Amino acid sequence: MTMRQTILTGLAAASLVLASGPVFAAGQYGPGVSDTEIKIGNTMPYSGPASALGAIGKAEAAYFAMINDQGGINGRKINFISRDDGYSPPKTVEMVRKLVEEDQVLLLFNTLGTPPNTAIHGYLNDNKVPQLLVASGANQWNDPKNHPWTTGWPPSYRVEARIYARYILKNLPDAKIAVLYQNDDFGKDYLIGLREGLGDKADKMIVATQTYETTDPTVDSQVVALQGSGADVLLTAAVPKFAAQAIRKIFDIGWKPTHFLTNVSIAVKAVMQPAGPEKAVGVISAGYLKEPTDPQWQDTPEYKEWLAWMKKYNASANLADFFTVYGYSAAQTMVAVLKASGDNLTRDSVMKEATSIHDLKLPMLLPGITVSTSADDFAPIKQMQLERFDGATWQLFGEVISGFGS
Image (cartoon, rainbow, N blue to C red; front, side, top):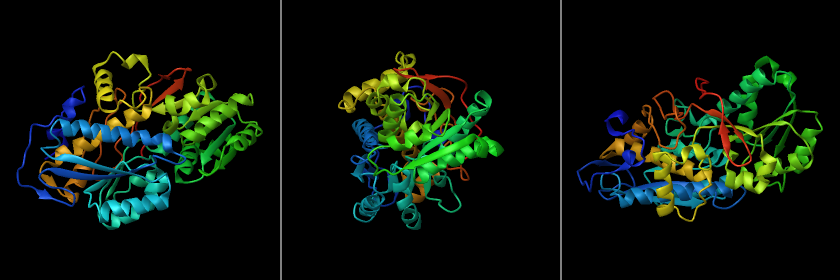
């Protein structure tokens, strides 16, 4: 059974997920699966320095609740077991071992964060447990040869940074670039991608770098140091808490660099509002999902369906929270994989379907962007579009950019 045969790619989300009624045909099952249930494991930072991202896990739970109300996946309800790891790798290891060894989940889905996922990467692959649609753009999730049980979901951080580099080379060829980044693989991937994109000009154009730890109280001193370098362009690779701090401090000290901000931290509610929206005017990022605060989408069938789902299943969430769109779309991808697996719900079968997705269209992806994987390419989303914050929402500009590799 192929993805093309099983996934309806109409505009409405319901066209992806509507199940026909209970089906109790005999099938091949892996751990966590029965005629009535599919257990899926997840870890999220519902607390800790990246707690704003916990909205993703809540949105995923809400989406699976809707699927269950509609009859589940071929009659099987999704039992979504999501645990709080506080964005702490040791805690992630503890939680994931419990999910695999005690809860006996079929797979791990959209576990969040580069450091937490790095901590469980080897364990899940050694035990042949699917680590699907990881909520991190680190390059290491696209490694079919050495880690055949792991796939990513968002675009590669390196690809994103190369897009910024291309813009800089074309529009700001004399730029003096500073980089603020989280001191782990998440942040380092952005610096690597920026250097790759700038090529032989990287050493001359990058004039300063500063790192922060997730345990730091603020990044104020790092921002001041970067201003002192004389840089007129800044790339910030930070999770929401520290991205908001950076935006606020840049404004407060009167620094006016052309500011590029990682897509991880574009949420209006979680980043721009705490920073002060007026302080973020002009910030540039790259997106692949529709921003819920952007008026251009609000009369579309796709947005209206998302809004109806929000009001019924995720009513406690803020309608301006971009992370609800992320969770909604990631969950749709997971549902598509499970539907494609039919009654053959073994770990091998689900892994096969997750790595053979062909041009899956999701309602809240930007136009022209689709989800695709293959046996030798485990990176589902490979396209992005530049966007600029105007004080209220993100305004897209330029064309959808793809073909940057992984």
